[in-house]
Length: 592
Image 1 (tube, one colour):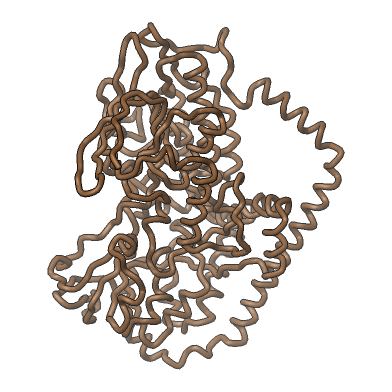
Image 2 (image 1 turned 135 degrees about the vertical axis):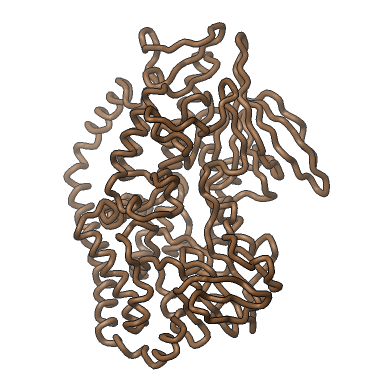
């Protein structure tokens, strides 16, 4: 199927994962239909399309990792990658998004074209793959929304001798593209490099079929037990929409109370994370293994992981753990830094993705051919050379360009879906402002973005993320990925943005105009109209206030009580079974 070249459309969305689909739905809800979604692959789904390795699943509860307007029809607390992909496909079909998607369109560059008299435009250059043929094509659009995510370009470290290895080398994100399944590794000797989210998910499954699995851990992680609702409460909550909505509001509160406060260095939260991680290890590991695999950095500095299957898999007879590091590769194995040599058939790289720079693989040129995030470093711009954007949405010098899942909008202690929905609402509001006022373009004011970046740097100081040398959260030692507050704060701040006051407005027929708000309609959801809506909503809900608050309190007590019972069971099991899994201590000590 060939696509016609489209040179003048209202909006282009790059990417068809959760963020891109969310933005498309918000456009259509507000009567915006002249847009395209450019997708480099042959199917939608983003990270859930790409990551098909054995055991791949979402470690965030389903009630939270789903759209607020489209409840997941399942009684399962956590979905695997296939269920996540099926969910986003159903959502795209239900809301009529498929007709807007153009598959096989890899965006390679974008250039902002200024026109003194007509509308300014983004030229989006793509490399197309249709059947066996490839070609280049240029799309023109008034605004561009990047929704490319961060977890789609595999990162494979350049270990000495890796090119000499004659066996298979595969990244966890390449299982689907290569058509690999778990049975392809039956009876083989496999090395897994890494100890992050993908490593702790793939090990329990692949260990069951392999002759040997050698796990190479450079930096241990805090791995907490996955404490979920019991079957009956879970069934009730997922069956009743009202309870599901309350549960969805409750989960971010609980997550941020522990994980966000741990990042902030709160003593109780820090030690709660360490205590839960310790319990999880004590159920299966002997003292020497616990010492070797316990992180030596503050809780929250790296992503806190959740698993009930990883440690049981680690102590299986065919699993060998090495924490000394990798010295080099040979043609048929791995030589560790402790001089131990393992003969290997396949190397599985669970080594994450290229997350910095943002928009990796896309060359973006803004006003006056300015390169995205290529500023010269100086005292006046402490974020020069690294990704930065006002509320993660827009950056100076790049009019009508908006980011979803942009800099500093990763939810280190929450679900990014909450952020996506708020970003989609703001971008739609900005586009409606352009259309209704017939302006050429808008771009965030330099002083507004500078003040926001300064605030981010100040608030990031002392947080756990900045207390380690490197992680995918950091670039040049600065936090460029994570939001520094809670999800509600981000939502409120984005809703309160006044486009007229915080952005420069470029009008038709004028070179440049900065609107001060006189005689202009305020395009802030926090304006007078919104205040009146909040007041009427409050008045309407007053009769129900004394019903909702006690009900939420009871709901809170029941859910927390259920989770504490689960935790108490883990503690009791740790105490009673403690050292029963130490029969292979000698072998494990040698492996370490």
